[in-house]
Length: 282
Ligand SMILES: NC(=O)c1ccc[n+]([C@@H]2O[C@H](COP(=O)([O-])OP(=O)(O)OC[C@H]3O[C@@H](n4cnc5c(N)ncnc54)[C@H](O)[C@@H]3O)[C@@H](O)[C@H]2O)c1
Image 1 (cartoon, rainbow, N blue to C red):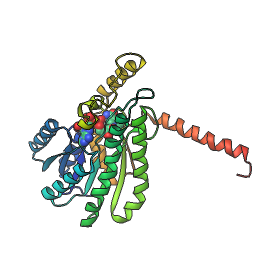
Image 2 (image 1 turned 180 degrees about the vertical axis):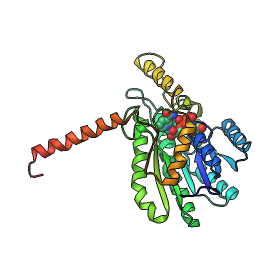
Image 3 (image 1 turned 90 degrees about the horizontal axis):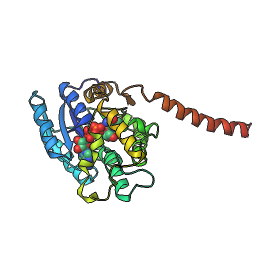
Image 4 (image 1 turned 45 degrees about the horizontal axis):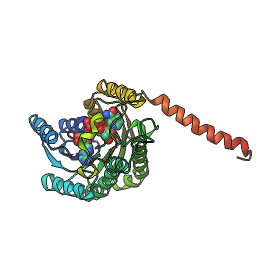
C-alpha cells in the first residue's frame, strides 16, 4: 500500500506494547485506527492519548480468541469507519507452561490468543478488505520464536503457526489485492512478561503460574530484565508502517537472533546432506 493517508486499520492488542506502537505510528501517518483489546482501562487510556494528538481513532473491547467477539469488533469497525484496509493481528500472550508443568488450559489459552485469533481475524477481515477493491494489508505478529524455537512450547508452536499461515496466504491473497506480512520481533520493551493479567475468566486457575523456585526463576528474571531494556515498541510501529507501504513478507526488528536462525538452517541442511550421502543417486 503506497499511500496510507485516510485508510483504516484494525489493530488487536492495541492497548499496550507493540500493538500500541503500531496504532500510534499508523495514526501519525494519517490512518484511522480501531484499537481492539481485552483490557478496558488500558484501551480507554490508549484511545484518549491518541485522540489528544488529533488522531481519528476509536476503541473496541474484545477477547480475540473468541470468534464472535472478533466479528462484533469488525462490525463496530465498519459502523465507525465504513471500510477497513489494514488488519494487524497483534494480540498475544506468553506462558502456558513448559514440559512437566503445562496444562490443557494453558495450551488452549495461548493457542486461542496467539494463533486462533489470527485465523479468525483473517477469515473475518479478509472479505471486508476485498470488498472495497482499494487493496489492503494483513500484518500478523509472530515472533523471532516463530523462526527458531527458543522460548516455551505453546509460545513457539503458535508463533511458528503464525509464520506458516502468513507464508501460505501471501501468494493466495496477492491476486486479491491484499499483501500479507509477518512481524517477527526480537526483544521489545512491553508488558508481555505480565501476560497473566489478561487470562480470560474461562481459563481462571487452569494456566500454570510463573515459577517461584528452581532454574525457571533465573530464566524468568533474565527474560524480564531483557524485555525491560528491549527495543522501543514505537520503533517497531514505524517499521510496520514502512513494511505496509513496501509489502514486506517478513518484518524483523533487529539482528540479535540471526545466528540462531542460521544455526537452525545449518542443522536442517545437515539432515538433507545425511540423506544425500546415504542415497547417492540424489
Ligand atoms: N515483547 C516482545 O519482546 C515480543 C517479542 C516477539 C513477539 N511479541 C509479540 O508481540 C505481540 C504483542 O505483545 P507485547 O509484547 O506488546 O505485549 P503486551 O502485553 O504489552 O501487549 C499485548 C496486548 O494484547 C492484549 N491481549 C491479551 N490477550 C488478549 C485477548 N484475549 N484479546 C484481546 N487482546 C488481548 C493485552 O491486553 C495487551 O494490551 C504478541 O503477539 C507477542 O507475542 C512480543
